[in-house]
Length: 197
Image (cartoon, rainbow, N blue to C red; front, side, top):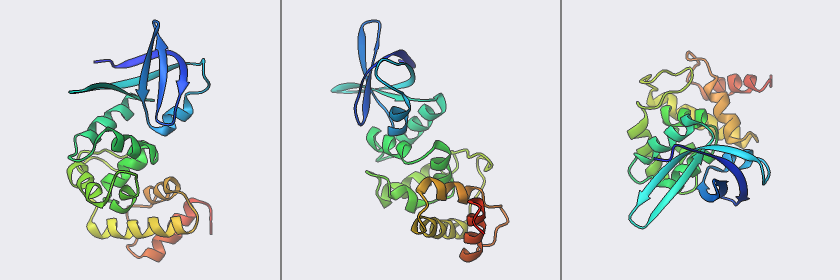
């Protein structure tokens, strides 16, 4: 197993980078935010890697943190989620936002990710809901279907008001556990997160 690579960044593409170490250039696929954060060609970089061995290929995937790599591996354990779909999920927001979407059963948010339809989004929630730990939401904390449904509506409302997926997810995550199930009341609380009266 190649656990990490440290070397010189010699090429950057939309979905991968090439890192040279010891005279060898390693092609490493990575989530878009990781690629964007690596810096300029010639910079010394370090990626935590996962090597996937298939019949016809050996492919390296790179991540900013060990935690991010572990989440990638967890996503691959779900039937129907391949490496590209897992990278797309990790590109759709922070790992905490992704964990929150899975833990709260936010199928709508997950299904908007390229290569993740509603069926796979539902499978992600079904298979990983109890296995994903979210800051402030201990593993195994149950989110009722009613809360998940109103949070999905709230997410849509916030996006309709011009907030990004990431901002909407962060505002929903910040809602108090005793927040009412009423959409209007939850929307008011979410807007306070942004400092909007």
